[in-house]
Image (cartoon, rainbow, N blue to C red; front, side):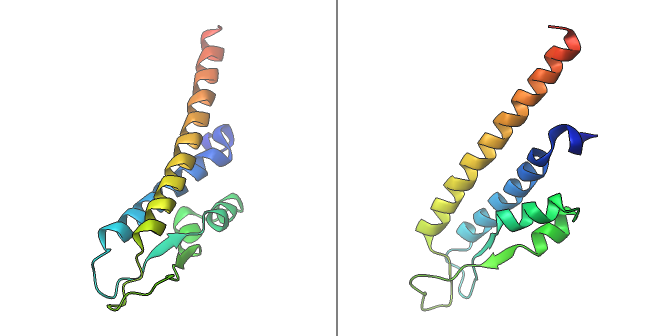
Length: 115
């Protein structure tokens, strides 16, 4: 019921949350030698979810490794400017999805109350 009630937005919120964790992990490992920065191809993961894949399969199939603009001498591929930009972009998408869901819930609540 929840998947049809909230449509694509429930899956989008879950995937944005997973992507946020992945980007935060990149930032946390910025000084770890040999660490390879990863990101989630959000569109591919969302498409997989909408085609019936479970969350783990959708995320696993949409993980991509970043190709650094300026490779580090220690093999670390985290570039803080790239990570901060991705984090901000994902945060805006997360908030937009959350706002849409909040509006949807408010509408349903008003309908149930008879307002």
